[in-house]
Amino acid sequence: MIGDKMDKECRNKEVFLTRSQPYGTAPYYYKHPGGPMPRINKTVVLALLIATSSIFLLFQLYYYRQYVSKNGLHALTGKGYPAGKEAQWHVVKKFLGLAHKFNLPVFLVDKAALSLLSQDAVLLKDSQLKEPHCTFLCTHRDFITFGLLGNLWKYDAGLLEAAEERGLELLEIRGKDPRLVSMDDLMGSEIPLHLLFHFNGRLVHVVVLYERSGNYLWNGPLRLKVSMDRSFAPFRKLDFGRYAGAYDRPELLLTTLDGLDVRIPKNFSRFLNEHSNSRFLECRYREAAAFYQLYPDDTSPEAMDFRMKAKSLLHLAARVLAELNVPFWLSSGTCLGWFRQCNIIPYSKDVDLGIWIKDYRHDITQAFQKAGLPLKHKFGKIEDSLELSFQGLDVKLDIFFFYEDGDIVWNGGTQAKSGKKFKYVFPRFSLCWTELLELKVRVPCETLDYVMANYGPDWNVPVKAWDWKSSPPNVQENGVWPIKEWDNVIQVF
Image 1 (cartoon, rainbow, N blue to C red):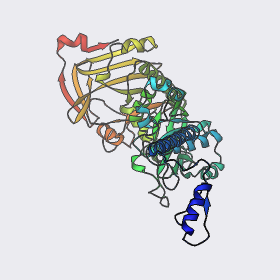
Image 2 (tube, helix red, strand yellow):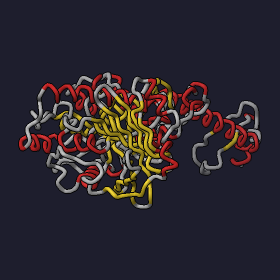
Image 3 (cartoon, helix red, strand yellow):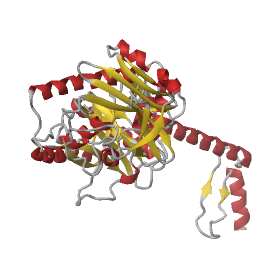
Image 4 (tube, rainbow, N blue to C red):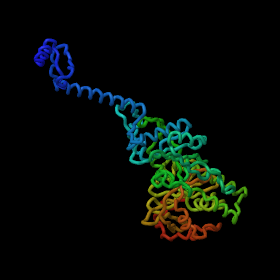
């Protein structure tokens, strides 16, 4: 038979007929060199697949860590942009690269970021950390804030183009330069006040800080022009810009935060405290110019001499109180002079300061005497109507201590010859910074209310004949000191 012959022939030649070969057609033969194929162990195949997959996964993880260490933290979206918390890190890195290229003297002033810092954190370098991280620059907010030292910065118009090359959209806010505004030139010129860099829903806010003649840093308010996009940034949430602000120049420290070299205030706790009380009020030059149109300034040698001595006394008093860490503000006639005419009133003959009684220190008198200002008189006591007066060079320094009482505050006065007590009542107020005679000083933020209380609705009209016991509209009689206390509460030197 044909079939038997083929089977015998296949066995003799160690060949096998393929099952798919149709019967009666030309056969296809395959010769296995070692005989029949052995059965494959499924367990071995599975083990090989698991080992191969593990090696591939380890390689991917290794490559990812190498990429992250080289390019930073990137949690990429489908469009290739960073997303999530790490997106802020990416934007900050872009900005700091731009700042380095243009030599921008920037330092971190962000409230949320600085509040996360401690001295240990500042000294910790990223090289000591084994895992990629973003602790300080990636806060819960979509923006971060840097300060820029305006006096050390040379404006370069190429900054806009370079920012765009990095994908950063730049919005520049300008305003008047107060250093150039005066009663002789009310227009001034415009300078950059705020720079906002936007990228992929994240923002870097740069506040330009200019040095003023009082040796302090000043930032201007952020005011949008009508044509500007209100949706460009969360303007109402920004740390800086609602008001102008004033700061002592901080000492800066270069450190590493989240793998990036960043300058921060060395005493960042003090800077944060300054920020919470930084609001600045500019002198009202336009109103002062109008005042002098009606009442020409006294430029006599006597008036000029008084103003020079008053300036010297004010600077000396500020230094003494700063060393004692005692805050003060311009009060009475000195406050009126700043508010009304941006200067000392030449016929006032003294310098008036206010201090909260809670800030009184027992060594205040000694500190002023050590500075060369002898005590002229001391009226009242710590619990009631305390007032100190020191004698400068032909100019007297009066310090009034203020007491809080419900919704009002008050300071006292004493008539030495009769022992009569007087009380001067003011509405409550907060304190702001301003500049007077090239010195950064505080004034009541609600200055008009303060001045109106002390001088009435005609405060804008000069009055040279002023009786401190009856002229102020806010004065009240407050009894008489007991004679047995006079030696302590009425001291004249």
